[in-house]
Each structure stands twice: as C-alpha cells, then as structure tokens.
Amino acid sequence: MVVTPDGVTTPAPTVIALHGAAQTPESFRAYFGLDAAAAKHGFVAVYPEGEGRTWNDGRPAAMRLKMMLRPGDDVAFLVALARRLAADGIADPNRIYLTGISNGGFMVQRMACEYSGLFAAYSAIMSTAPANYKEECQPSKPVSIQFIHGTADSVIGYNGFWTPLGSTLSAPDSARLYAALDGCGPATSTKLPDLAPEDGTTAELRRWEGCRDGSAVELITIERGGHQSPAMVETKPDLATPFLGLRSHDIDAGEEVWRFMSVFGGLPAPAAPATPPRKPKPKPATSGAAAKPAATTSGPADGSKPSEAKSPAAKPQGASAAPPATSAGATASGVTGQRGISAQ
Image (cartoon, rainbow, N blue to C red):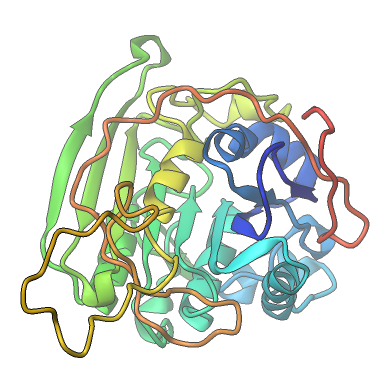
C-alpha cells in the first residue's frame, strides 16, 4: 500500500513502515498515524505486508512467530521493494527510510545490520535489540537509528528478557549497542514536555551524537507507556490495544520518526572551487540550505556506502498535532498507488 499525499511530487522522500505481528497493512496504517506526518511534511508512506502477517526478523527462530509459519525471505523482499520504489519514480533513492513497530521494529534492526547502506535512517518502535546482535550485528557503515519504547511494555520488555531459547537487550542497552557500533560520543538526556498529563505517561529523549559519518542514535523512553506507539493525531486503534497498556499523547510517533530521519540523506554538498576567487563575495543560500545543513548522499537504494549527513544538535520539544492525511494509495503489487483518495 502506497500513500502519496496530494501535492507531493515524486520521486519524493519515502518512509516504509512495517506492521507488528498479525496486523494487516490497513489496520497498522489506521493505528500508527503516519499518514498525518506524510501529508504535513510531504513524504510518501508505504505499508508492505510480511508473509503470514509477520516478519522474519533477526531474533533466534524459536523466539519468533515466523517459526510456526512458512518462512519467507523478508530481507530480499524489502531490498526489492526499496529498489522498485526508486525505479518506478516514487521514491527518492537517497531518501528511503525504514520504520516499524514490535515484530516490524525487530525487522527494521535486521535490515540495519545486514543492509546498512540501503536506507538513509531507521526507527524501531516497541522493539529492542536481540542479544545475539552483540556479536552478529556488523553493519557495513554507521547506522542512524531511533528507538521509542515504553517502560511498562508487557510484550517486549523495556528492560529486555531472557528465555532458554534466546534473549533481548534492554532499550537503553540496545541504543548503546548501535552507538558503540557508530563510534558515538556520550549521550545527552532531555525531558520532553508533559503535554497530556491525563494520559499517565511522560517522555524523555536520550541522544548520542559525535558519531562517525554524521550518524546519530536516539532513544525516546515513554515512562509508564505500554506496548503502544505514541500518537497525538486521531487514529483507529486495533481491538487489542486497550489490553496493551498506556498510550502516550505527549509526542507523536509519526512526527518523531520524521524529525529524526529527515536530516539524513539528500543530495551531496556542492564541491569547492579549485581556485577560490581573490575577493569572495557573499553568495545566496542554495535551495533548501536554510532549512537543513549541507548533507552528503546517504542510504542509496543500490546498497552502496556513501557517508551520511551530520545530525543537527537541536533537541526536539515533542511533536505537535499534525493534520489528517489527504490521500491514500491502493495496492495490488505493494508498490503502485493512486492519489486523491481520502484516508480511511
């Protein structure tokens, strides 16, 4: 399912969003609320479906629902999807991003470890790093990745969990793992405004910068948050969500995902002249430079390894509510879409 908001000219920045286990792309889209951010900021949202409505993520097989189903090569599928979106002129090949929740979030991390050059940035929500990643995750380039996780998550424990069949790291240790792989400096922490005191949650941002090639790692902790993605826009929750704990309305997942990801990727900075002028004069800003710092090419769809853009040091103050998405994409192949259909 491809969602191209009205007024967006393709090829455009594109966010591929992976559903949780047993969700359909339609139910995930209605629950996640990413369409609103896509309409506000002008990017394409894509909602693929894993075989059997699950993803063959990087946890030991015995910890995954996929072990009970016909295994699918989801890595090859997502690689082909990203390349097809670029080839069809839907996605800017330098600005394709990957996010997901729960089982989809684990799949995001597998792609970050195995295809770090394919996507410009990653966001894993309600999922932590499998403990085996301490040895097995060896990305070919620094990975810019965001985690969002609730401390009261009863499905994927914030503090990690152990079983005889495998274990996961805590959310902070998961972020530290990627920060170490990226060669980041120390983390800084910021309490985010409690914009919805009635929801029973608060949020804190922990961010690692000074990483190689301008990459960055961050963790947004939702205190008392359950197995839920935060939302400030109107969504249509799944029937199971009342049993999954508190859902924060202090921040919006779609806005926070885009805030983190959008600074990575883009066109390379213009080359300096071989012989500078004797009397340099101020030059007008290059188009788009006022909004973002100069960036180097990152995350091409062909899996090559250019450097990434430097992440800005400014800390977010929580996302503000975004307008509803104005159009939706219909899908038969998972890549095609159409404009002007109101979001359901």
